[in-house]
Image 1 (cartoon, rainbow over the protein chains, first blue to last red):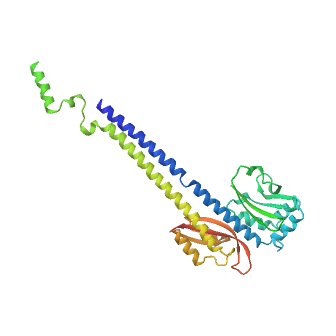
Image 2 (image 1 turned 120 degrees about the vertical axis):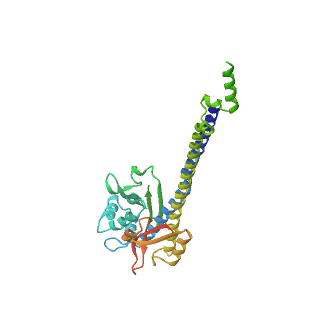
Image 3 (image 1 turned 135 degrees about the vertical axis):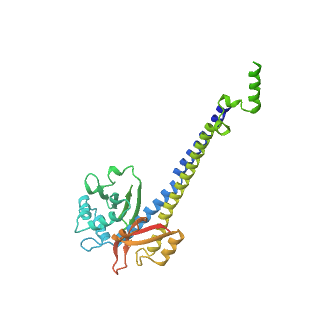
Length: 166
Length: 142
């Protein structure tokens, strides 16, 4: 009987030790999760801010200022196809947009969105139709994703948003 | 009969009575409980070591990212790149216990294999004209 009691004590000790080890593993897996997500958020905001500053100096394929071209189109209520053509045509703004996705931590899931006079568009690549500009929102595939947004107002009526989807 | 009782008594006196009932020594008798105790201790300390490694790994990764953000802020303090690796960026990296290298565009392929890469789209004025470029900051532990 004495031996059985000792084994039982050992088993109970093992149960307690395994509980403590599980607790340690659990806390270590959760450790710094929110801090890390805040730092990742700061990194994305920094990327967005710097990218918008860089776009300020960008020129399109014809050597025209990228911001000016967008503003000229958005100020007069550009159409969806007009914007889409400008940003996907190699002789116009395609290179600028490719630079954006090439350097972005979100890669191809980087969208440029515009809020102009009577026209809200989001332009970027999506899985179904490749590059396109959609009215109002990015495609449905990004609805439940984490998004980091940076914006700049280039005129009193036109605001540009850079959205990174994860 | 009397002889048998005498033998029994002698065994008890010599402390050998238990041996006849399966007694295998002081250590052997406790072997089952010792195994479970050793298993429990092994499990617990494995958990402690694994957790410490996880903590250190997470803290290290955060320091790399925080350091790269700080270095990037120093490099882009004017809003664009004029000097790719200013002295102040070395100090920022040092304060995070990191080493770093900064590259423009495809130069990032020269990053050491162990380095973490963080990229930014920036305006570069180092060539005279203002141009868009990809800035990659590689950070690794000192």
